Image (cartoon, rainbow, N blue to C red; front, top):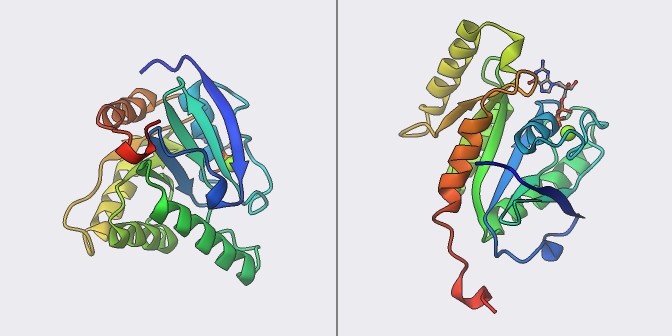
Length: 206
Ligand SMILES: Nc1nc2c(ncn2[C@@H]2O[C@H](COP(=O)(O)OP(=O)(O)O)[C@@H](O)[C@H]2O)c(=O)[nH]1
Ligand SMILES: [Mg+2]
């Protein structure tokens, strides 16, 4: 896929105020600092589109970016940030889980995982929750330039093994580096393919 245009559309704190669900969308989510903003910028080829390294836990917003006038990247707040209060964490949970569970045009959740790390409990729990809800997701391993490909492969194998404790099969996996610009074609190719089967629900057609 060639990204011809990528524009910021809106930030929301309320699920009721999201754009009409008439275009396919892909939610990007992961632990704070996983490299989500960098990945969004790398995929779109726009350096400042998603802001990198903002104070973690600060922006609790659902951000919509429209790509090629045709589909949305949705930037969700990171999870697992230790320094936010318990109340804030619960707000995060409710807000994001409502969005993920209810959004009709959500095609796939792109779960970002730091490829340097062994499987993290919070990531596995989140994947299990997605599974329970029957939501499609893929794993996008980030920062692959930070270590050898052998190490990356080992961490991925461990993550797969951990998922297989609860899943019958593992979802598609992408290995990326925003620094080295790798994995871009694979992720965009996947989105392109899924976009191809999106149909606007009849009741939303005007
Ligand atoms: N080496 C390397 N560093 C990265 C990569 N992606 C992000 N980073 C760095 O990791 C930090 C967090 O990235 P950011 O995109 O802000 O993460 P976010 O909090 O998930 O949005 C920043 O210092 C980035 O420069 C990558 O692919 N390779
Ligand atoms: Mg960010």
